[in-house]
Amino acid sequence: MLTSAGCNALDYLLDDPASIHCVDVNPRQNALLELKMACFASGNNNMLWELFGNGRSEHAPVFFQQALSPHLSTTARRYWEKNLHYFDGKGWRNTFYWHGTSGAVAWRVRQWIQRRPAVRDLAEQLFKAETLEEQQYWFDQFEPEFLKGFMRRFLKSHLVQSMLGVPKSQQKLANARYEDGMCGYVRDCLKHVFTARSFADNYFWKVYFTGAYTPDCCPGYLQKEHFSRLQNRVCRLNPYTGTLSRFLQENPGQYTHFILLDHQDWLAAHHHAALIEEWQLILKNAAPGAKILMRSAAPEPDFVPNFVKKHLYSKKPLWKPLYPPIEWAPTQVPGFGRFRNNPLN
Ligand SMILES: C[S@@+](CC[C@H](N)C(=O)[O-])C[C@H]1O[C@@H](n2cnc3c(N)ncnc32)[C@H](O)[C@@H]1O
Image (cartoon, rainbow, N blue to C red; front, side, top):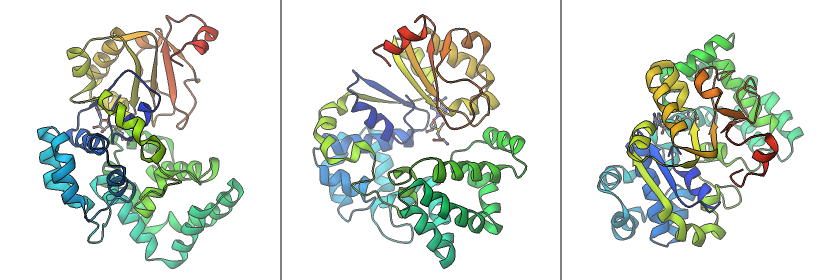
């Protein structure tokens, strides 16, 4: 799987896989995963919660020196020696979750909201909503107040979108699809998040707004009851810094799952030859019945090469837009019934 921030890898460990290779071309992502793994390896649940639940701890330097640093690779140790202040809880951006590029954007958006009492009150009501009806009610009032003027220009800007990890290729897709470009895309995303699904346990968005998780609204890997299980299994995670193609070239095998996130949007727009190579390697290294999970900002993932499509069975119609993840499995597993009963499912 792509490492990204490493939370998903830890959550997948709860499913008891034999091992997970966490591949990311960005060494900072693996440094972050390693720090989370080190919290488990050192066996201190309070430390894990202070750093990644609260996002801040006055004890961070002691934790680092005494408990975490010995578990890190040289690259990760150097990275955290420079950046441990993310956790010091000082200054305006006083939580880890308001650092990094997407954290900085979250902080700026929050600051804009906090300075406008009317918008802030609506946001607070929206975040507190407990039913879909309440969410819809508060969103209808919040959205027109939020997506206007400065905030429209801010969210539309190429710099901000890049900081949020949305590459130019995805921005182009949004511009082609919506009359008001990226703003329309953001509006659709917000609408979906705030009105189509329950928000009460949406820790992804709450952490950006409040800068911390709460014990009843946090990712699985932070939940107390999972700590000892993850502590025993964390050695099954193998961080690798480099492209997915390089990983598969260096580590050929029969992999049962490929979690690709949305990185192929970028490859499709900028590096078509690399996209082809990546798919060839995925097919070559996929175990029969392997599952592939990916997403795209494109309304149709037509960038998936034809030579790939004929090997795959799609669980969701390929034209389904935006939100539902697309899952494919190689067609060696004949028929939907067999696939549905496949233990990999
Ligand atoms: C695609 S981004 C996800 C950001 C995105 N906006 C989201 O929705 O989460 C996930 C990770 O993929 C990594 N990545 C991109 N291309 C890659 C590649 N070819 N091989 C390995 N990792 C890659 C990036 O460094 C990033 O950490």
